Amino acid sequence: MSVFGVIQLVLTIAIAFVFLVMGVLHFLPAPKRTMAAMIPPTMRWERITPAFLVAFTGVCEIAGGVGLLLPPTRVAAVVCLIVFLIAVFPANAFAARHRDRFGALATPLLPRLIGQVMLIATLVFVAL
Image 1 (cartoon, rainbow, N blue to C red):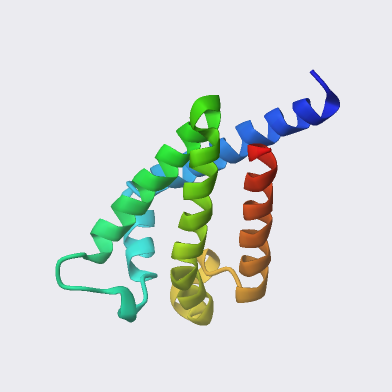
Image 2 (cartoon, rainbow, N blue to C red):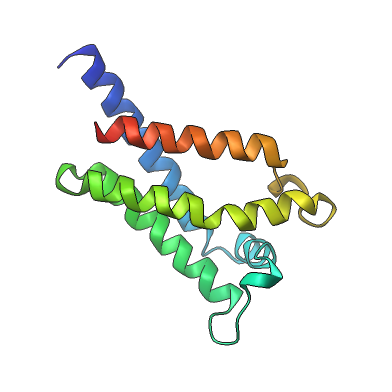
C-alpha cells in the first residue's frame, strides 16, 4: 500500500470513529437535551420534534460512520455525510449565536464553519 493509501485509510478510520462517537452522543440524556435545545425555532415543527431530529441525526452519523468503514458504501456515505454536515449547520450557527445558553458546545461561528469545511474536505479525500 502506498503512503497515500495509508494516510487515506488512517483518516477514514479516524473520521468514521468521530461520526460514530458523535452519533452515539445523540442518545445519551444530557447531550440529547442540549442538542435538542440547539435546534433553531425556525426548524421546530409540530410533528417533527427536536427530540426526533436529534435521534434522526444520531442515526445518520452512526450510519455514515459505518458506511465509511465499508469500501462498497464509502462514496455513498461520504455524499450523505456532506449533505448531513450542511443540513446541521443552521443548528450549530444558532448555538454559536447563543453561547451564553449552550456553553462549550457552542463553538464560535467562524471556527465551526472552518471545522465543517475541513470535515467535508477530509470526507472528499477519503472517497478518492
